[in-house]
Length: 192
Image (cartoon, rainbow, N blue to C red):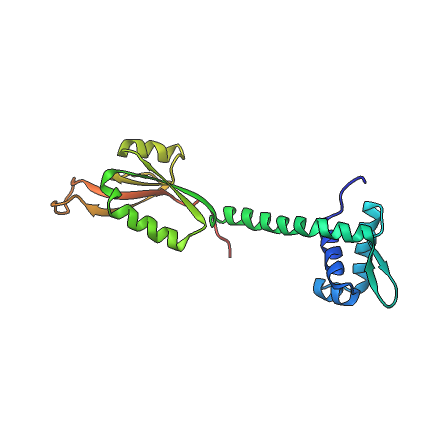
C-alpha cells in the first residue's frame, strides 16, 4: 500500500458498513449512489482487498471488511475528538489560564472570580501562582501568566487593565494606590 486512503473514503465505507445499503448510505452522505460506489472501489483498490460483497439484493461485509470496520470505527471517532479538542484550544474554549495573584486578592476577590470563571468555563484549567507586583509585570511580559492581580497600574498596549478596588480607607485621588487585574489582549481577530 503506497499511501493510506483518505478519511472521506474511510468515512464512506463506515457508513455503508453501518447501513448495509447503498441507497441509504448515499442519502446519509449526500452523494449519489454511483459516487459512493466509486469511493468504495477507490478504497478497496488503495488497500488491496475487498471490503464488501454486493449483489442486486444485498450488501454484506467480507471477513476482512468486518475487521476493517471494527478497527476503524474507533479511529474515526478519535479523529473527530482530536479535531474538536484542537478546535476548542484554537478558539480558547479548552486549555489553561495562568493566574498570578498577591495576598490582597487571595481571600475574597480572586476566589470569587475563579469560582465564577470555572462555572462559566468548566473545560478550562486554572493555574494559580503567588507573585508580587513587579514579578507579575515581568511574568505577563514573558508570557508566563495570562492574568495578574496586582497593586498599581500596568500601562501596556498589549494588555487590558481593570481597577478592581481602591486601597482600604483611601478616597479616589491622583497618586493613590489601587488594586487591579491585568490580562493580555486577545490576539485573535474575528471576521464576519
